[in-house]
Image 1: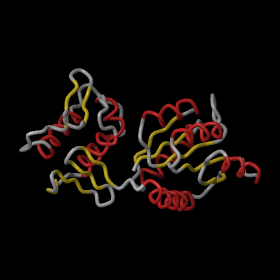
Image 2: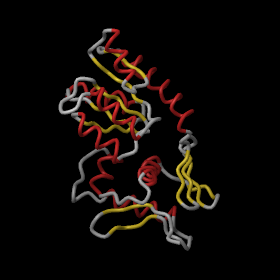
Image 3: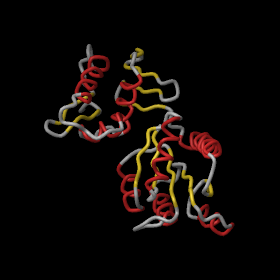
Image 4: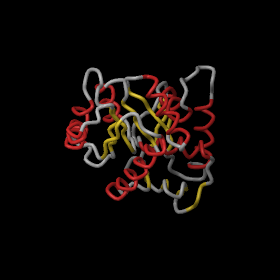
Length: 226
């Protein structure tokens, strides 16, 4: 599952990333409210962790904007402001929960699990589909034309990222940053190798290819043209 942390204090952002990584989450970080808004418009996330006191656009305004175009994504505000009025303002801005800093990692994860359970009831996003290819996120299974495709964890993560952005070209840099969580190195062919592995498992033997190369730009999964 993918989480966006909107936090301007680098040390806190890295602590949150470490905690979430240890629990199997893939984490993006935005250092201000404007970048946070852009990421929520361009990318697909399962959860947002948002600080209140952000540069360029504060967390409350960010929450209100997000709710204009995404009513269901779970939002947890993390803030050093712990007065009752602050909590009320956070919840009224559209956040689902409010946790005051400092906090224990156990409480943070308990709040996150509760929000994700609640969010799954609202969103019902348990699978991703492209033509006859289905990715079952809860069972971590891939099927094409009803046949199970055996994928490694990294292959599954890569295919999930492609399918969450169905129809959108993803650069090697984007894929490396999201799937391997490191900057893209021109001498590193991991992305190309894993795309080829996926093609052999997902497209081989089928008349219709779902994984495509955008020459000079990157890769995408798309529905076949009518």
